[in-house]
Amino acid sequence: MFKNKRKKAVLMILVEILCLIMLGLFLTVLQTNLSVNEQKKDTQGNLDEMETLVENARMSARQSMDSYDEIYASKAESAAFMFKNQVMSGYTDTNMKECRKLLDVSNIMIINREGEILAQAGESTADFSYERYNQLRLALNTEKAPGAFEVERDGRSFRYYGAGITRDAMVVIEQDPKELKALLSGISSWGSILENVNIGLDGFAFAVSAKDYTFLYHPNESLVGKDSLTNGVSVENLEKNRFEWMAVDGQKLFCGVTRVEDAYIVCAVTSEEILASRNTTVAIILFIYFAVITLVITYAFFCWMRRNSQTGKSCLEIFITTMW
View 1 (cartoon, rainbow, N blue to C red):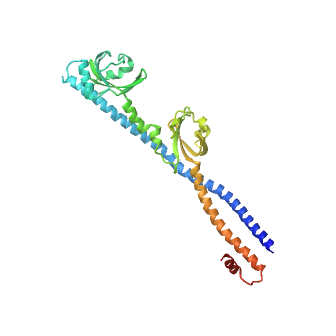
View 2: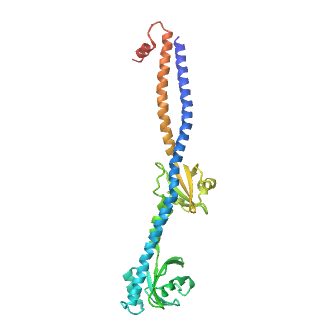
View 3: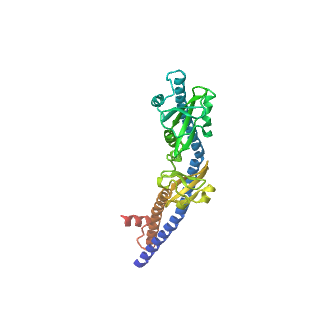
């Protein structure tokens, strides 16, 4: 009799464990799909905002550049005004150095229509007789300052602003644009645009070039400039703008893709975040199921004991007596 009871109890426990395993597998698959689908909706919301986010950053950068150029164009006009009104007389290097200090510019000079330098605050290697500088000469024909432009020379960049003094002489500012580039980098670079984008709890966004598939931005700065294809990114997923799992730099990520300008923007959530949400839900459901089924099996076991006993007690009485 005792052996039968033990076998019965063992059988019930085995059945319960088997049911828990089967339910756990079912819930794991189900909850994984639900978590992924929910993350798709959230990520899609981020992807839909990317074009507007980039457009706003570009617009802000253009406005900042325009403001920067207006300031230096105004400085060139101020210098021209001083020479026109004899505040400074004579095209001398001394006067140019005084202007450079007064206006806080990299270099300032006077050139004639042929592009000859008549006076300068510092040495310039530019040959203003070249056609590439023709835009400056527009200042000799109109009172309106010509638009700013940039020239790369000897591995360095220079930004130029001009303002006419007479029909044959003009002020030219030769400005190092590093301040401007730093300003624009903080506004419109892929890093400045994407570094504050929040994807889920621990997710992030990164950008891949649509031209050569190198990383334009990634939170891991060591990846920037490297080939994304050798670091887990799939060309097919990028070009089809698909939601897919990727193992980027050894980290498993659930990714959504959109293309903006000449870049693919990828919004990624770590597998740990998705699995943590799934595991919590599955654990709670399994715990509740385990508690309920254990009570049911225990009650059924004591009912079986009553049926095989002569006590005349009910199942509930046997259950309570035994538990206490």
